[in-house]
Image (cartoon, rainbow, N blue to C red):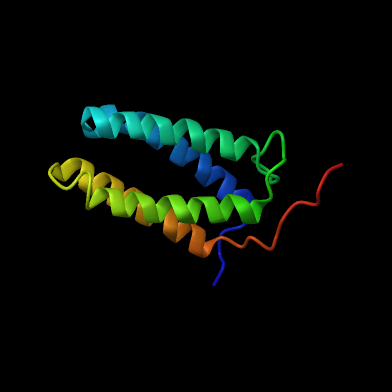
Length: 119
């Protein structure tokens, strides 16, 4: 059941970007985890503004590719949580939870409802 529209997905993307950029201070992440959170925030912002949906500005990346990238990143984050960040409970829980959240959003988003390509 795809209950998240592309328009709402755009809103969620911007909220996730803000969470990523605030998370080192809010959750007290380690230096390595903080660096990864900032990098992910910047990359997710670039991905979002370049996607062809209501949240995009440049509209050069198809929404389905956007979703596949998010799916891949979500799996990588869960793996990192239980490997690289295994010794630090805060980092481990943050990246496992964040990865699962992105995976849930990916699963519930209707990628077929997309804006027409603007030429």
